[in-house]
Length: 230
Image (cartoon, rainbow, N blue to C red; front, side, top):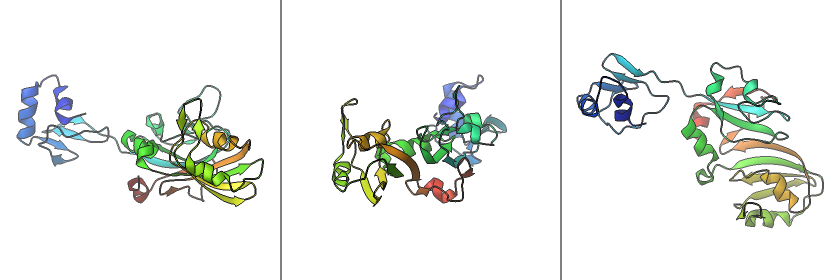
């Protein structure tokens, strides 16, 4: 919300008062004088008018979790344990997921309270590749590579997937780079060849790689470099 709108919510001030207060340098954002009434104020910013705290601000929090199979990518669920249940963090109800993984998919999941940051992670326009290790029931054949690179048509949504990179690692294993997250996308792409996915594990999102020290269900805070890479 804009700075002037936040201050206008104070019952003692009208819009003209707010403009004058901001112009006179009596408003601070994160400890610094702010004279820009259009300044975008986020959930995390501290806003002060003279000695009055208008908004206390909250610290931004960012985590990576090694999601286990069988845990739901949700903040709450009536029938399953959720990834939020795995966290031992204060006010974890304020956190949300930057993307999801299916119930039977494991690997890297990003969790935050920063909505702008999570949108950058998940939007295809951000070009943050999602990298998966895939295991299949039938052999993965070389001609799959061109089909993945060209994009595949999904009739239900009436769309063609973005180009994806497929690297064959072994007869039944491959590594896949995606730039979007359609419903059951990996399983449906391999299903185009009547080849069932038997194992799916996300290794990386953009420059953020799952920490190999994290066993399934464990998590850690992201580093400053990891946060800035998005």
